[in-house]
Amino acid sequence: MKFYPYIIGAAMALSMGFTSCVGDLDVDPEDPNSTTSLGNAEQYYGLLARAYGGLVLEGGISVDDGGAGVYTRQLWNLQELPTDEAIVGYNWKDAGIQELGFCTWSSDNHWLYECFSRFTYQIALCNEFLRSKGEAEKYIDAAEVETLCAEARTLRALSYYHMIDLFGRGPWSTEKLGVGATPPTYDRKQLFDATVAELEEVIPMLVPASQQIYGRISREAGKMLLAKLYLNAEVYTGEGKWQECADLCNDIRSTIPSLAPEYKYLFCATNDKYVGNGEILWAIPQDNTSLYTYGGTSYLAVGAYNGEVDVTQFGISSDGWGGPRVRPELSQALAAGDKRRLIYEGEMSESLTDLNSWKADGSGYMCIKYVYTPETNYDNADGSATQDIPYNSADYPLFRLADTFLMLAECEKHGATGCNGLDRLNDVRQRAGLDPVGTYTLDDLLKERQCELYWEGHRRSDLIRFGKFSGSSYIWEWKGGLPSGAPTESTRDLMAIPSQYVPTIGQNPGYVG
Image (cartoon, rainbow, N blue to C red; front, top):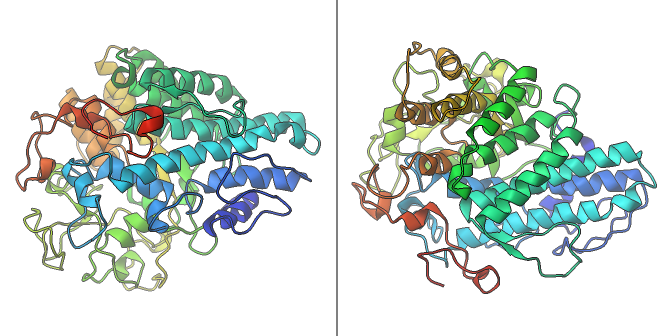
């Protein structure tokens, strides 16, 4: 089974904008902050399924393009386009998307508004589920109810992590807040402390990966989420949590010790075999017939394929959308012998000299990390496994074990003990077909993180943590809106609070409106 059946049923309702319900659920399609009457166990599972489905499908928020409003697509755009890994050219007319690539966004950028709205809506879905706990215990064993609630609280914590990282402030809302009540606004440290406390409480209630059902959050996934918060704690709060991060990473390694044997298969149509109790600690499932999206890996595959390149060798016969392109700095970081170099050059140029059109000989290479072919047919270039619909079945890899290994190497550089950081770094390099190193610097590690984790939604956070995002210490093409790049203000280390939310939660320093 590709995905847990309750989640498919409820997620399909999400994909139709909530015009349908699961069973007899009576839920206002645009207001998850509502009371819901449950009649049986299946309806309760379906309610949780809506929260899971909210990460992958459209619906629930008002956007000008439903497919562009998907959680994974919004998150990816804000984490990757402002960095040295990806950019969208002028051939796409989406308002405001070039400003993300240039680091020149304002509080009126609609991508910021849609992303912040998606986070708050997802949190509200989780709260709605948690408010139904009392009714659920009429139909489901109390211990199972506690487990399901722990999953919902972890899903909610994920959205708070993204809010902390991108926006640095927001409304703190839990199921204990009355329906319709205005939640208090928390600053970055308050959000961090509250989210960490939540995760520390719920992680022991989550099911270990070896026992968890595919598609649902495992204990190891919860630990990884908490470890990511600790990894960035110095940025978020001014106080490092390196040892705490290392301890959690080692906990994960104690139950899931080994990387997958082949890097490229982690991003193909059958990557679900590595999800959960494998290298992909937390995936957002996709399926091209039952759980499909214009976000996620569909956006990162056909969405990022050049429209004039024959892409049947990557498992799809549809024309590429000509969206995100590879920045030259990413191409230059990936050596020719690195197995992770999943970049198509063709007749295109590496440099982004022209952002207008993107033709087969245009500027910017094409990322082919995410493909439509199954593992068994991955290297078959005759098109026999090609599909003609744009939806990809590759699950979106939210967190991977390789990241855990590199986090251990980073924690060691910041004084954490018990990391074996050099060994873990070399484990990652060995799979990539590269020689081991005898020592490494933080700059080496930042480059290794790029080579291993590019286009997975981590780069902006990494650059900020290493002091390389804003300012002049690192310049890449089109940074600051100039072809050769330009310094940017430290203000850009946080996104602007969208103007629609400013009257309620205020604005970040350096932004107007």
